[in-house]
Image (cartoon, rainbow, N blue to C red; front, side):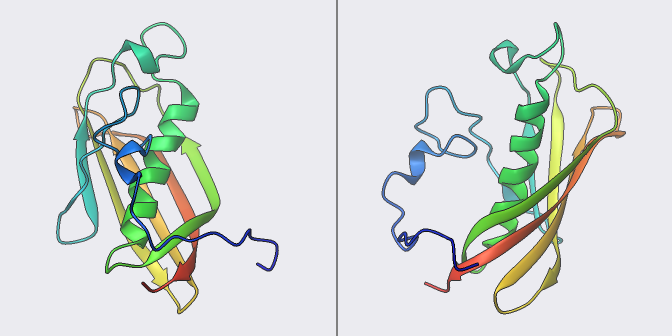
Length: 141
C-alpha cells in the first residue's frame, strides 16, 4: 500500500459535503447510517436524479450506496479507512421512488485491513444488490 497518497484523514472538516452521507451536499445521497447491533443500517428512497434506465437506480449509485455503508461500518470506533477494493453483485433492478434498506457489517478485522459486507434490500425484503469491501486502515485517530 506504499502508493497511497499522503493525506490527512484526521480532520472531519468538509465531511458534511460527502456525496454518500453528507447532510449539506445538495446533490448527495444523504444516507443516515445508524448502528443496528450487527453493523450499520439506513433507510433510503432514491429519487429520479439517481436514475439510470427509466424507473431504476443507476448501477454506479447502487455501488456507491454499498461502498458508503461498508466504509462507514469499517470506520466504527473512530478508525479512518479508505476503500481499497469493492466488489458488487447486482441481483435485481433497484426501483427509484421506493424505500430501500441498506445494511453493512464487518466480516473480518486486522490491525491494518477491515473486510465488510453490505446489502440493499427492496421493500418486499428481497436483496437487490450485495457487495464486499476491503478497507485500508489509514490511522487510528
